[in-house]
Image (cartoon, rainbow, N blue to C red; front, top):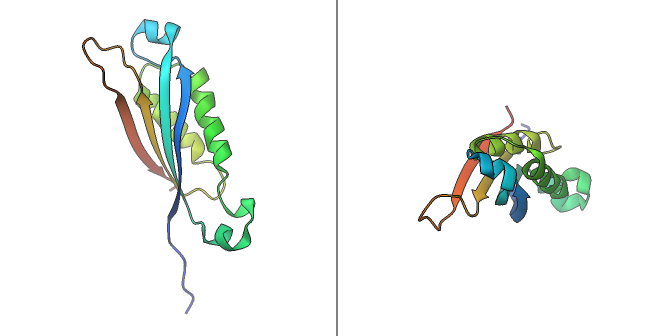
Amino acid sequence: MKVTNTQMDFIEVTGIRCYGYTGYLPEEQVLGQWFEVDLTLGVDLSDAGTSDNLDDTSDYREAISIVKNHIQTTKVALIERLTEIIAQEILTLPNLNQVRVRLTKVAPPIPDFAGKITIDITRSKS
C-alpha cells in the first residue's frame, strides 16, 4: 500500500513594510500611509529538507516581491480587497498550497485611536 504524504509545513515571512495608497478616505489614496504584512506560506518542505534544492520549496523572495508591488501600486478603497489580491497572486507560486496574509494598517486615520488595524485571511488552492 502506497502512503501519500499530506503534511503541511509553513514558511513564516514577517515584517514586510511598505508605503502604499490604499484607503477608503480620498486623502489616503493621495497621501498614502505605511502598511506591514506578515505571511505564512503553506508548503510541503519534506523534499527541500532532503534535497537542499530551491526548486523543491516555495521561493519566499517572490512572495515578498508580490506584497511590495501590490502595496506600492494597487489603489483600492478597502484593505480587505488589497489583502485578497495579494493572497490570490501568492497562491500562483510553485509548490505553494496555502497562504495566510496578515496586512496591517500601521497608523489608520481614525481620531483618538493610536492602534493598528489588521486584516487576517487564509486562502488555499482548490
